[in-house]
Length: 364
Length: 255
Image 1 (tube, rainbow over the protein chains, first blue to last red):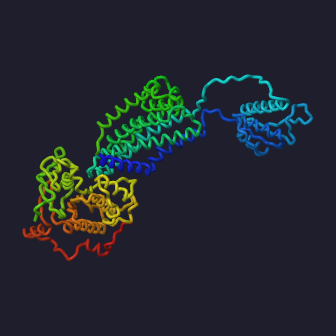
Image 2 (tube, chains in turn purple, cyan):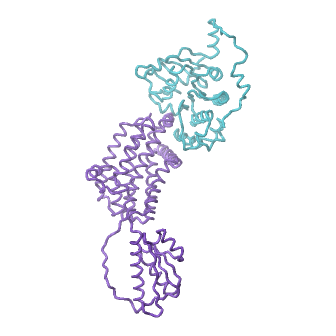
Image 3 (cartoon, chains in turn yellow, brown):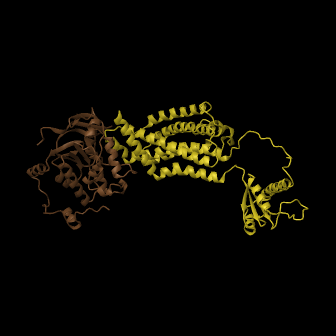
């Protein structure tokens, strides 16, 4: 019936509007995961850090510019031009692995030539490892430049063969975990507290005074939370990709998993909200369910780092299934067939949560 | 003085909570266009009686019809025709008054004219405000506006003026009188005798789940005097509330 859908639609829009206007809810479900991701993304744990190379070009000749351009071609060097005093200051602050100075009139010529001048390099005694590594690279680049300038391209001394593979950084591990975590938090907390509040304040009771069944409101809440979860997943995934995460699998599989996960955690959220008489009852239960999963389901660090018995137990947590599936799709491009076990695990949790929720649910 | 076609008929209503009998055989009729008051001390069963008539609470025994519809058989049908202001109710915090009225209209399948409803309870300037920013009297008036979204045949008001200062209470009386003039039947509960005397055509006094008296306020007073009742101190031409209103004026103190 068109009228029924209309009521659902209006309640759905109102639910979405209410969520977006609830600053606490928006902060915890939208901004907090984003902030966590930005922090880890900026710190970029686990990724090989670039070596900061200060370059002081007092020569400014064609040769010096060519060598600096060659430095910039080296992936692990982050070339930062500057004058000597400020670069030395940065070095003593630990912000430069090495500072290379091109003296005035410097030319790219082999030692022994009349115009030959050596480059001067400064490194901090506090970071000798970084300094030595940068120095090796700098020497190699300059030496190769001299050889090349001497005539034609040199014969390679070492032939490199590439092996297929990807370098999965911490951010690649983290982003799927943050997605799973966000879906859980949104499902449990956005209803566990909000809905209980509607019960205690009598807002829900006021809905009972209308001829519309409150189940419309319940389904509108579920609908709006699903849409919000999808939007949130897309935003977080977008930010993750911007940070260099590779989305190997299909975004639609990610969204499908997000919906399945949301349904499971929403059932838990409504179970808590339906059972609890007030916020004081809802809060500890919601935390009791979500906090262990936050740390034991492999959102922030791999479960492999945990003791064996803990791994065996946490394998069956709903968030573990969701995180594993999201990671398989995002990092390895798994399709629905590969993550079948995870989906079955989530489905079992969904059924359990739904049955418990309907048993415990009280409107008043 | 019951009219030939009562809009509310309650017959021997009963409600128990375990061993406690909250409502114990209540019968009355309300005529169309009437303002009917239910008075009584706390725990007398006023709210339970109202909630059974509203279809908000199952009826344990007896029967009730509202606008010809049996409450037990079709509570949704009853709810569609009545407006309810609950004693303790709240509205979604994140929506403003206009949005709330429009949303509630949808719940009745009607397109609510939010501006007109707010004008009717003098809240036009609060159209974009949220309920939590309203004063007690404004909240009650908004609650009444929300109960009017479906242009109800009967308006149920459960202690509409409890907790309000004398100015806000008198102001609400004006609002309720206006609603009555527009042809709505009103049934209300109250603790305030002056309110019942000012607003109600007839009142039922409840105690211990039963109606102990049902008549017009004047007839009740006359009957009491007829039984030889005299006050210890003769009533003067004014009382303390008159003094208070005279000193502080009728103006609302809300913002």
